[in-house]
Image (tube, rainbow, N blue to C red; front, side):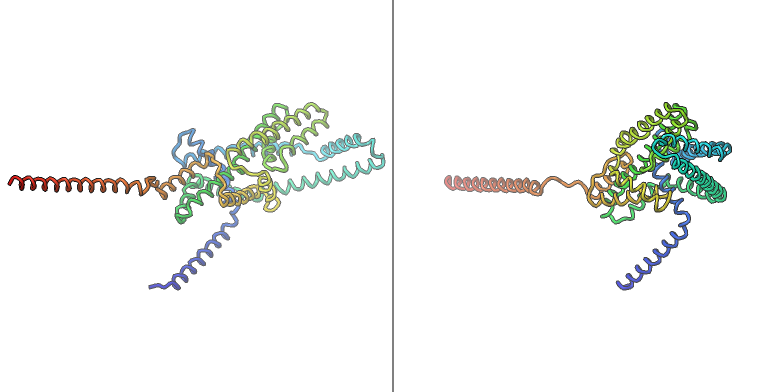
Length: 418
């Protein structure tokens, strides 16, 4: 027989082996950590689209619906990417640094005319020369950065293609088996911890839905509205600028104003003040006010109610720490901690259609673990029996007494006759 000491040793050895193997797996997979994060993020974001397509097309096969979802998203992003590449290629082919320098000098002269009344002529000349040289240095710096980015992309295109292929495959299998993976994890938990884990998952789903899905939907809608509006206003390349507006809307500090304010200044300087005014009004109303104050609050009311400070920190601070991936890692980390806090404090889960499956499963399991109690009190069950028994005893006693009396009377009567 194995004693307690042997069992402890075995448990310790197994724990060390499991931790060592887990660390080895993390080390071997660390090169693809960004790919794994992108895949999980994509599966969570595309899950509502996958369910919607299955509902519309009535496709019951998860493999087909996952392929259809990934194809639609891939075609959309490929079209946008190719459009941007084509526009940048055509503009770079026509790019002439001398012409750009001339335009910048014209802009500097225009600025000097505005403030010329308040600055002496000698200072104006020095300012113009300094600004002109700074602009030239900035142009050369931007061109060198663009060249480095293009060369880096071309040299690493094989690696990017392989990472993209891995993302697509992981995304496909996560869309198919993501819910089964979660349920398998819940099944191995102790029975007394299942309810609190399900509550935590409900909070996490609600918060992530608000941070990721709602936020992305609003940003995409802002980009679409911006592209349509710019096309109607007459701004060239509206599709590309719509994509730029969507990306800018994703960053809380930056926002769409980073686009429409410089665009309005550009058209005002080049003698199109009416178009500049229209761009400012359109940007403030349709790119800032309506999406930020009407669309986003309405969607977030149906999901996790998150304070704007958390949203601002989760999307902004991680960008300066981990780079572009911070826009995914930050909200995921902040949302995870917020879900833990709400689970610990017993915060009420805000119901959302995405939580129905978890809630139904949690309710079913709660019914199985806690069968309905019989509301009848023990006293109510005993009393009728007691009464019945007492009644039967009384009746039997009465019958016995009456029988005895009858027999005694009969005997007495027979004795008298004798």
